Image (cartoon, rainbow over all chains, first blue to last red; front, side, top):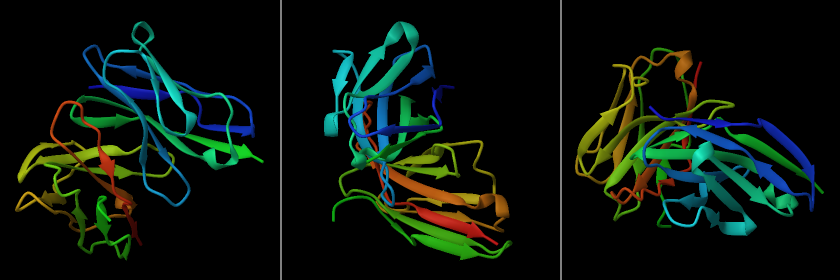
Length: 111
Length: 114
């Protein structure tokens, strides 16, 4: 069974700072990789996804993620965060139709 | 609104009571998933359907839990004889049934068992 590990439980940063959230997964076969975001009071929304091809994928709201197969990693980045990026971020892996999620990282952006 | 909907949004019940939740997926999606999320954790898979067939159930899904999707459209998740440990957010998601499997989530039903 696959598992997903997110490195940080809570990240606090100021507006305009850069953000990087770590995600590692364990699964030896072909996987699809996702980052979902949950803004306060809202439901889970897809931020970006990787299926194949270019390992650097761009998502909504200026987010991007890099798939490094040799490291089993799929880290999320944003060069300059805004207050509205305050949310919980979940990395997820899909190897057999169901999603396996990490525990999530709460990101708080101070204005 | 064409997203995934769930009803009720909140449910408070006493231990030992039965509860039922409903999920309406996006209309053209043939796969429907149930997940459970507790505080400080990511969603955990419970079960999923392709059309009306229940294809997989997690070991998390004890025999007190049952899910149905009778006509391949909406789904229900029933918990019998609720326990305090069942308190959680129950999430429903749907997708088109390909390997490139982007799942769209509903708002969830928050269950509190007193």
